Image 1 (tube, rainbow, N blue to C red):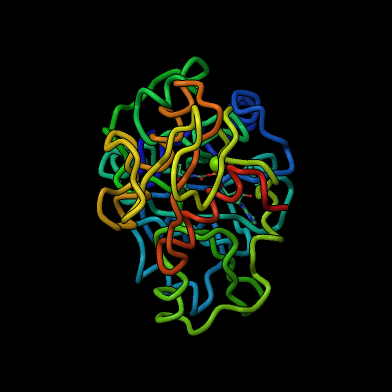
Image 2 (image 1 turned 90 degrees about the vertical axis):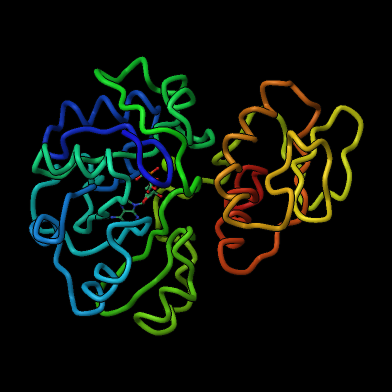
Length: 284
Ligand code: TXA
Ligand code: MG
């Protein structure tokens, strides 16, 4: 299933046998819960319990690349939630995803369609290469416009925390619900493993030039070959959209390492640097 962020491997959220196949196809640990994708706010309301802050966030950012973790209500099997009493919900913005969800009429769980630990697929071909063999049907929605997975925030017991940065930035969320609770750094999100989003080649961060047999992913003033530019200018949206595709393409060349130019840390840069430090295996 295409979404505006990355491709997902989708299953009926209530069908435990189908959900089990998703975990198996990805090689995903069973303790890592999936996101329930829904067509609209009334379906979201059946799945989870929204407080006032959660409704404000939903109205501000849905359909779009924001996932909200809330107290669980109904319609998503235990396996998909990894047995938790919370559930992650999102209304994606991609037209094909929305048409699929509207036609299905019930929640669809969809983790990123990569095998566990690998970069998420942002093109139909990459999705099919990763887990397509397990899927009954593949929907080609073209390249994903955002390119990094949705922002994940939890709204639990009156406190809003950021579990995974994405293109809906910390600042944009704070404009709607005020500053985020301290310490919500992803530690409580079961899926944030040490080495994640990782290609086969080692990843070297904050590189200012390519070393021997390295490929340099360029940004701003630091550039190698134009083919390997995350952005030829210093456009964070362009860099996010290119990130996983270029990591995959560079990996196919079997370089000694993939060197990556420094990426500024503000705004969407928080999400890009989060994925890069995990791809390099630096975050526990
Ligand atoms: O952009 C996206 O979100 C994509 C597209 C396909 O929608 N999906 C995606 O799913 O990235 P996945 O499974 O790769 O990442 C879901 C993240 C994981 O880090 C997981 O641990 C976290 O959401 N998550 C899910 N349910 C949770 C819960 N109840 N509490 C805390 N974290 C949760
Ligand atoms: Mg994933």
